[in-house]
Image 1: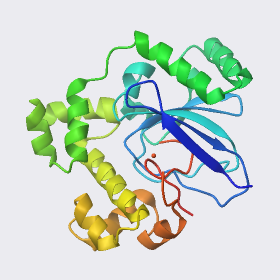
Image 2: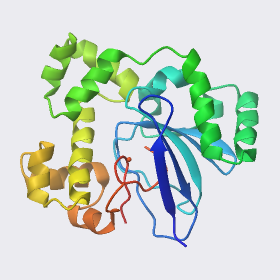
Image 3: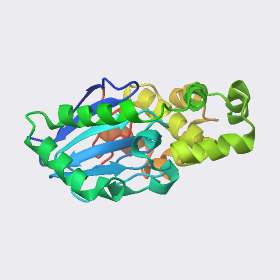
Amino acid sequence: MGRVYEERPARLDGAVVWTRTAGPAAPFSVLPDGCMDLLWSGGRLYVAGPDTRAYVPDDSTAAYAGVRFAPGDAPTLLGVPAHELRDRRVDLAALWPGGRVRRLAERIGEAADPAAALEDLALRHAADAPRPDPLLRAVVAGLNAGWPVARAAEAVGLGPRQLHRRSLHSFGYGPKTLARVLRLQRALALVRSGVPYARAAAEAGCADQAHLAREVRALAGTTLGAYSASAPVASANSETPQPSGSSTTA
């Protein structure tokens, strides 16, 4: 039996709980999606920072449970700026007291449903953490709607420098990179649903199909054809092949 990926909305606003069971299959890549994940695998708790390029896990046969946070939400819960974790996988013990993290990891490993236990952990810490920046949530919504960065910044009353500084802290990179990542995800979602490449490029906000092809190569490390051939047909930064966030590629 091959890998099986499942996800559901979390009780934490904007987050997703997901699992990937182990099994023989081809290596997969995790694509940038603007998110950060809290992960449990093999008795280890760690964090996947925001990606700017495709990430290939060291062990593609491992099983995982994860909580994927909405773009910009994880830094307040974890207590670390997103840019410090950009393109990195970091043990949670490097961010929180090591002894406590070991106990948490053991508790999750002993749970009947590690993903639910991981969700409970995220909920407890979110209750005591500062609220995510509502201005940046509005920025994400604007960029995801295809707005130019300048329009998204103006809509929330932030200047370019202010927006860039807040974006580095919350997203791990500047708003232009976030806009590219979100546009790529919109385009790939359309490709997965069977929309022709040229139309997917136009609807997602790319100049043309060639523009989309360059973005897939730069951010996903693959080609449109290879992605389309390997991607699931329906279903979202996690260590898992998933269709609407960081997706799988062969």
